[in-house]
Length: 60
Image (tube, rainbow, N blue to C red):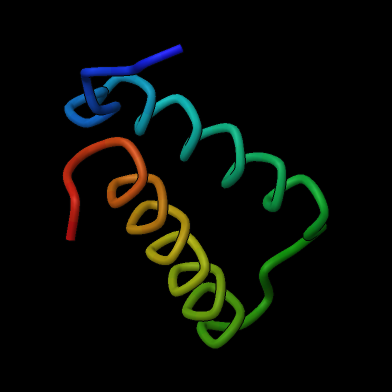
């Protein structure tokens, strides 16, 4: 069983997976009361997007 093609350039998969994970994490947080809460969630969102971009978008 040989795979000659790589799984890079699947940008739709990057967008869909990132949205699913970010919305899943957002559903556990009831309210964001301070700017610090939003900043932490933004850092998590950036990590998730970078993770899926590296996995399916292009190799780093």
